[in-house]
Image (cartoon, rainbow, N blue to C red; front, side, top):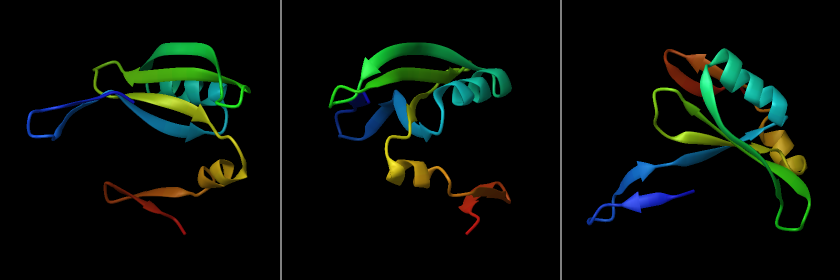
Length: 96
C-alpha cells in the first residue's frame, strides 16, 4: 500500500485497500461485472514463501482508492470472510 502524507503527517491519499476474497475469479466477476469497477491488474505473483498467487487490483471507474483482491490464505483468513455482514440503515454491521 502506498501512502503519501501532508506536512502535518495526516494521510492525504489512499491508493489501495486489501480485501480478502474466497476466489479471485468470482471476486473479479462481482467487482467488474456487477459493480462496474475497472480491472487495473491481474498478474501472477508469489507469496513470501514462494507459493503462487495473483496481484489483482480493481478500482471504481470514477476514481479513488483501488482494491487489492487477496485470496484467503489459510483457515484464519477463510473464516474471516465467512462472517456475514448486514446492511442496516445505511451502515454495515455483523449479523452475529
